[in-house]
Length: 285
Ligand SMILES: Nc1ncnc2c1ncn2[C@@H]1O[C@H](COP(=O)(O)OP(=O)(O)OP(=O)(O)O)[C@@H](O)[C@H]1O
Ligand SMILES: [Mg+2]
Image 1 (spheres, rainbow, N blue to C red):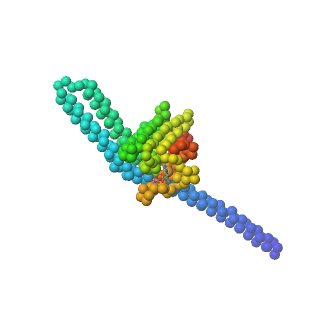
Image 2: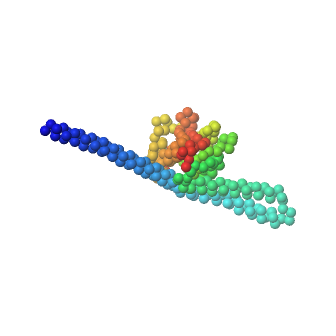
Image 3: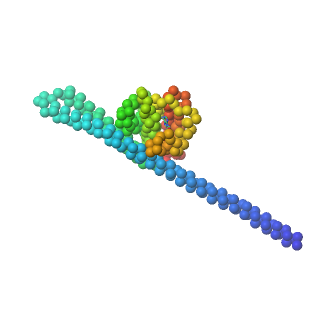
């Protein structure tokens, strides 16, 4: 009787022991799998948002960009007419010809800058490996996409590059999107100001590059700063802003192992992008 009782006891202890071991292990494994899937889905959604955000920004700017390309085209047409006139002269003025050709070259460069900016931005760089590129042309090309809007609102735009050629590793298409979003945010914020200005400057240290985008706004109160980077936080009217720009931007910069923040000590509104010049190789594929 006692033997049988002990045996039954032992059986139950073993039975529940196995259940207590196997069940949580299985549940844990299942939860782990689920969390990996959620993580993967989240990353996929984020990358879709990055692409959708770019395309929507491009759609909004399409008219301005078309205008921005049309202007130099009109100028080129004018220079071509002048060239035709001069070439019909018996003794064409060589200096004038040289001047017009130089101006033609500059105007064509303007169009090329805009087209490169468009290519950078519209490119679906999801999954692209990090590449090495120069930051200053990327900034110029991105700013050129907003030129029409900047001019229409009479915003004084200045870019102070670093003294050296600043080269870093990253995904230019995504970084162009971040700069464009900061720029569009600044333009929206200062639209009604009297003397409007925006300045972009680049500073570098041996391992880091810092891009500062400052506008003439009065700065952002500390209690609001945290909210800015949350998805769907917007102070823009319905149909004007989705509130996704900064949350997408901060994700892009984090994926580049950098930082995007508001400088609390600046006199004006100042956003700072800090990026490592080299990406850790483990992440660079
Ligand atoms: N330079 C700035 N000056 C003042 N406020 C700003 C500035 N940049 C961003 N903000 C504030 O942060 C909010 C969130 O910006 P975010 O770019 O995430 O979204 P959004 O511009 O409103 O919409 P979108 O998705 O079209 O970018 C803005 O609505 C604005 O209130
Ligand atoms: Mg925005």
